[in-house]
Length: 118
Image (cartoon, rainbow, N blue to C red; front, side, top):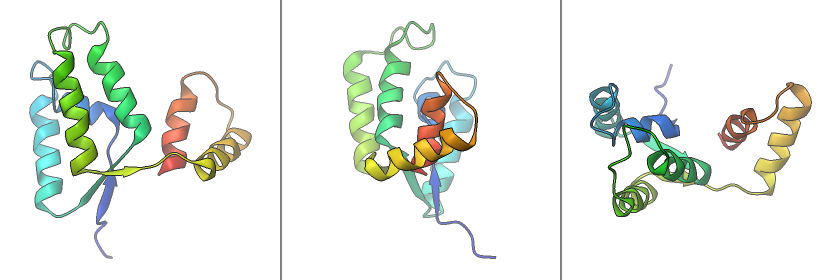
């Protein structure tokens, strides 16, 4: 069986890897470094970038001292160093099909959109 050469990374991993006070900081950084060292393509989406900004600028006690300029710099780094999946009409069609097949609502739609993007 051939090894998978790409992986989709969710917002939490990116946030944990950039919050030194996070209990998952070392683990997230180690995993991202290992993926890069193995030549695995790291994919994210525009939604993940937006969610990162929200999580880093929210009222979380772990992120309250993060300068906004640092969050902007982080997002630019992610956009330039990872493959960014675009959200388009095709993704919306897949999302709507998922909603028709699986009962969901509220914030679950955000995760379903990520699944549609993948």
